[in-house]
Image 1 (cartoon, rainbow, N blue to C red):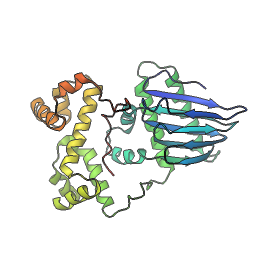
Image 2: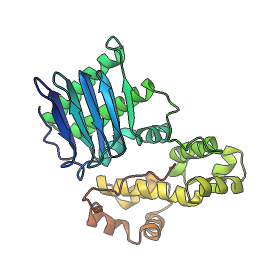
Image 3: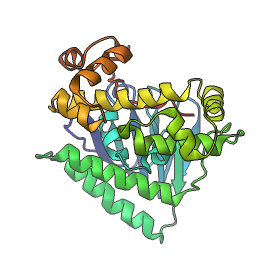
Image 4: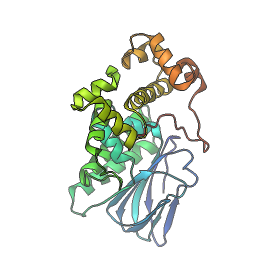
Amino acid sequence: MFDSPLSRFRAGHIECALQERVLAARSTASDHDWFVFYLDSGQAVAETRDSEFEMSGPALRWGPLDEHTRLRIAAGGAGYYLFFGSSIFEDAIGLAAEGADLRMFATQHLVATFERSDSLGQRLDALFQRITSEATTPQFGSEVALSAYIRLLLVLFWRSVDRDVLPRDSKRQGRGDIDRFRNLVEAHFRARWTARHYAEEMEITYDRLHDLCVRMVGKPPARLIRERSIHEARVLLQRTALSAERIAAMLGFSSASQFNHFFKSMTGETPGAFRRRGPVQSDTGTDRTIRFADWP
């Protein structure tokens, strides 16, 4: 088994000979937020806080990481594992309008199995070899490359399973409208559309949109739009050296002062103070400032 020296990304290849191997995430869960297990051959059991899933290779398991996550690979099995943080996850999701659907898909525990003759399994073999090679011998731009590989992996996974995979309560009345609102927000929040503008685009009344958001997400649409903008602002402040003026322009504000006022009204501090303070740590030490998971 080999592992990656990168702090925000761990990748490794496991080959079991005569005995079972157990890969436990307890020691890495405080530093990473997502996991991928790819079982190339043999048998394994993937365990999380709420479930246990038997895998027969080739098979893939993806999901949010916690201290209960572990993989038990039977003797003779072989595969790969990935652990990574929210920054790489966010880069992998990207900024395209399809990112809203991709994000909803990716925030679940997912599993897919493949036939040995399936070309997808062969593509995954090659992709995981590239990922582990990049992660174990990092170079300039390695995290950019790894984010791109994770995006490709996620899209391939997305195509391989039912696109309607959703949480159990997701088929509530109004799901289609709230999903459409989510997609529109992803596509247009930088244009600073108002909630009424979104309602008009959806050809529903503002009252209908307000009712949907409050009933299904617990927040009015204007709040969700602002939170999407503040999420993007935090990402840019934490992970780039762009000036406040440039970030303001990218997010559709007319001036840096308008952006500063917006940021302080939402967070209680100025963009400069937020940037100097660095990533906000959760109780477990994990950077939680760049998640955007309020959507149902």
